[in-house]
Image (cartoon, rainbow, N blue to C red; front, side):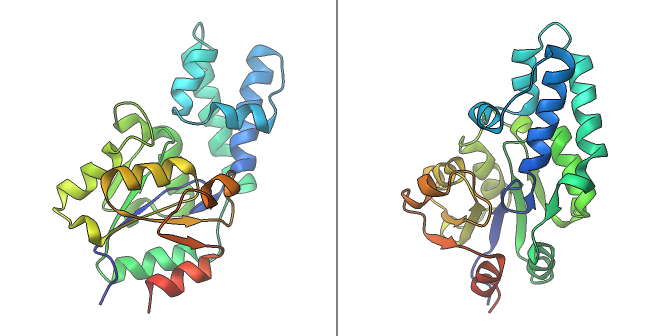
Amino acid sequence: MNKFDGIIFDIDGTIVQSNELIFATFNHVTEKFLGKSTSPEEIIALFGPTEGVIIEQLFSDNFNEVMFDYYKFYKENHSKMAKVFDGITELITELKKRNVLLSVYTGKGKGSTEITLEELGLTNMFDMVVTGDDIIGHKPSPEGVDVFVNKYNLNRSRVLMIGDAPPDVKAAKATGIKIASVLWDSYAKEQVLLMGSDYYFETVEELSNFLID
């Protein structure tokens, strides 16, 4: 018997190791259009809204041009700078075989989410994909969880969110579902460890062993 009827996955830091790509893409557009480099710390400080919202704030005069260039660089360099964590694709495939309903809830925008899922070959693996462009506000808004739970009429005690960052924990707790915090690439590991998640996993293997018995 499956432990959960529905599972919601974050993307960056959970499914894919993508910090290098995200940092490089932001740095590419700030160097090209603002003439300055941006450190990883400065980019992390911007996390929350989608890349589209951030770019609109930074490049209001030439937003469309910058956005086009952002996605072009992101797609062209995805296979070089981002990689799926070992075992994650196999885990998602097995959960799908077991008829567990699967969703994505990510703070990424729709454009970068579609590129990542396509590059990883995961586009058709999820029953629902909720991005930062699909909700009011941004993660940790509970909307990204509620839309999945309500559409499939799921019992919240049988739904799990899997993510690496504080917004994942907050979103899950706000909606009454379980949260599994994964620590294999968390940019905020120390903070996450203090937040009292239902489960913590250091490796994909540990998560898989928990979900697939």
